Length: 108
Picture 1 (cartoon, rainbow, N blue to C red):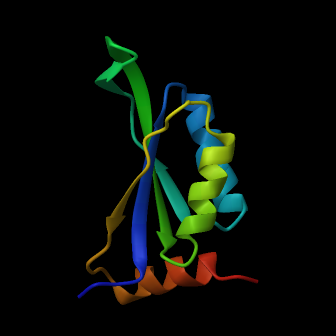
Picture 2 (picture 1 turned 60 degrees about the horizontal axis):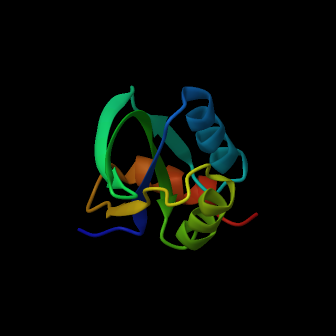
Picture 3 (picture 1 turned 30 degrees about the vertical axis):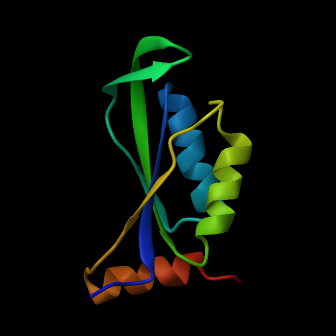
């Protein structure tokens, strides 16, 4: 059953920057919470070269209503010229958790 909850993800090349991106979104109530995954190796094309970098992935839990504001905030503070930004729908979950996400991101 589809919900109004989504998980939005970005990556960054520094653990401190990852924490700042996660904390800032939660403090602003743009996301109810965020996870920072351990560093992983990213291999990608950039400016006609293969890049190999260490990156941390930040996964934000938010609502579809708050998603535009979260996306705009991340774009305004992110260090990358073209940051990863993908959104994954949440097709289900515990009612209590989904309600918590909705309550924590509600306009106050």
